[in-house]
Length: 485
Ligand SMILES: *Cc1c(COP(=O)(O)O)cnc(C)c1O
Image (spheres, protein in one colour):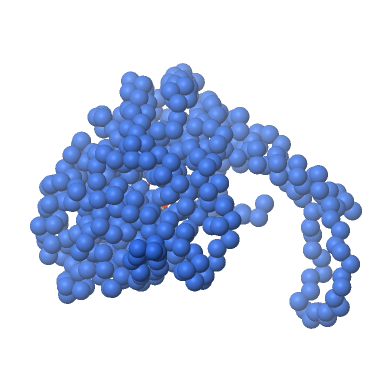
């Protein structure tokens, strides 16, 4: 790794004898510890309080985030997270709850969970929802497990094949394998749709189902969707929807009406809750009537209906043939509060405008870049699009080089090398929250990088040069991982 700017570690800043704390005098008797548990030395950095504050404040300013700049990370939906959602989640009435409190004392929290289930059902057209899965992949695992439970109940145990289009997110095959299915990839055709001929070959009595992402990871609404869903249903399979891309469909199309049987939402992508760096997320699963008894639980429910004097009493219900509890307690409550706040703040019309502007922004970028970057699937996109950085007249330049160079222009790079069917993929998702001014600056940067790629490709190969650290040696990082320095 190359250092572009000097960054001292906290150990290098250490100065013997300096410190920023004083322990109070102990008021308990010192205990004898067994000698063999004691270390001879413990090298800790010695710093004043101010040294520590400056060190961490400096480090925090090196972070790139949605709050500091444009973050066009395709598939991840890095939209702006309104601060009011954070504020709501921090209300002490929410943040100080204990998961084992009696339901009578947490009716407000249960009402929010109940209404969030209803909101998701309204948006998706499904009949039931469970908010317990902790992330998108966890929602997939739960939904695919429900498909397995459905076939097992009907004694269709030979149905062991899960079809997955070759453009899918890597979590789809992983979830299927974890649920005991054999994964069969389905080809994508030249327009970026599910190839129906490839699909037909697997529509037999071994078919358990298909996992479809729509819009798919090319950012395209699948023109063969209805037909593909029909074919799978005809063959006795069920259709799983990877709903991570619901940002493009809010208020426009309901997955249940398109024929999906079960789907997860990524609340942390679609409904603006901060994510990345491993969490926290929320991967609510929704399904049709015939799968509702298999949902993971517990689910917020009315356990005593309203009377003339009293509101309904909310509590927990475990669906009859539930696949079980997929996490501890009731799901990621704070994330759900943020998503709930977001939905109420925008309302029905606002959520629809999210989808409209997400799609408009992506098409605006795509149209402004496609004369200088190769665009493998050239048709109107949804909330994201994928470029293929392979210029015949600049063969040494790769998607990775463009991504790194964007950092020198102060932009977060787009997702790269995904989906796998586009070899030099740059997957760009602007989201609805960016202004035209920001999009125009990004276009300018991308066009200027395309020019550099042809005239001074070394600028791209050396990039980034304006960041604290230079280009990482990715092979070395993977083979010789050091996580302590
Ligand atoms: C993000 C994403 C997932 C996985 O969601 P996690 O919350 O990261 O587990 C699955 N499918 C698609 C298409 C995604 O974009």
